[in-house]
Length: 467
Image (cartoon, rainbow, N blue to C red; front, side):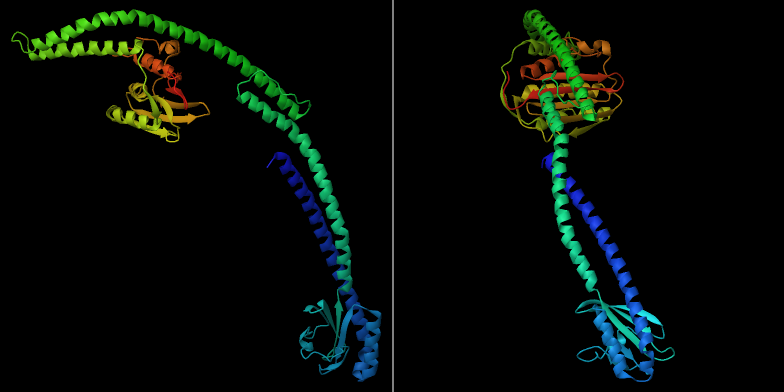
C-alpha cells in the first residue's frame, strides 16, 4: 500500500472517529437530559394526581378516580397506564383495557417509601413506572407508567441529521487527506528516487525540492551528502587505481626476476636432495645429520614451490562452489592449531551464501591462509568470527580476529611479496591469496585497528567465471 493511500485512510478514519465520538457524546447528553426531564415530569404528574384522587380512594369513589385517570391520559399522550391501590393494597382502579396484569403489584413496590421510580423493559419499549404513596400510613399507592416516545422521536431526528453530517465529513476528510498526502508524499517520492540514484553509485546529482521547511532542509542535506560521496568516490578511485597499478607493477617485476631465479635453483636443489638421500646410509654420516639436512632442503624446496606458485600463471578449474563447505573444510584443517591456541570460532550467515563459480583448491588455500594468520595473531587465545553477506553482484566473506592489529605504517605493504612481520615465514601467503582472488575477478581487502584486531574481506563475483 502506497504512503498516499495510507495517509488518506488514516485522515478519513480520524475524521470519522472524531465525528462519531462527538455524535455519541451529544446523543448521550441528550438521552440523559431527556430522561431526567421525563422523570421530573412523571413525578410531577403522579404527585398532582395523587393529591387529586386521595379523597376519592378513601371514599371508594371509583368513577371519580377513573375520570381523573382518563383526563390525564388525554392530556399526557406518553402516559402508558395508571393504577391505584386502596388502603389494603388491592388494585382499586386502573387504565388497562384488558384488565390489570396479575403481577402488577410486583412491578414497582414502594415498601413504605413515599416515591420510587423503576425502569421496566416491556414489549413497547422502556417504560418508567413512578410510584407514589396516596394515603400515608396505608398501602394505598398510585403508579404511573410513562413511555419514551419523545426520546425515540428525538433520536430518530438526530440520526437523520447525523448521517448527512457523517457523509459530508467523510468527503471533506478524503479531499483534505488527498491534498495533504500530495503535499507530503510528492517530495518523499523524489527522495525515494534519489536514494535509488545514490544506490546505483551516481553520486553528485541533486534532488530538487523547493520547500523552505524541514523537507527543504532534508533535501539540502541529501544534496550535500551526494556531493561528498562523489568527492569520496573520486578519491577512492584514484587511490585504488594508483594502488592497483603499483601492485601490478610489483608483481610483474617480482615475477620476471623470480621466475628465472627459481628455475635456476630448482635443479640444484633436486640434485642435492638425491645426494643427501644417498648419504643417509653412508657410515661417515649419521642418519640424524642426514635427516636434518634433508629437512632443511625440504624447507627451501617449499619456499621455492610457493614462490613459483605465486609468479606462475596456473590454469584455473572453475566449478560451482559452496563457500560454507569450503569454510567448514578449512576450519577442520585448522582445528589442531585453534585448540592449542585456545581459540573459539563463531560463524554468522555463512550458510545463506549463494553458490559461486571458482577454483575450489585455490580458494581453500586463500581461506586456510587467512584462518592461520588469524590464529597466529592471537597466541594467547581469543575468538575468530567468520561472517558472510551478498548483494546483487558479489559475495563477501569476512574473517575477524582479536589480535593486536596491524601497525598503520605497514598496512600498505601486507600484500607485498616477501614482506612479513613473523620470525618464521616467507612473506608470500597474502601475496598469493591476493593474486588468487584477483584472478577470480574479486578483491581481497584488509581493515585493521591497532590493538583491537583485523578483518580480511574476500569479495568474489556471483554466478559467472572470471579468469
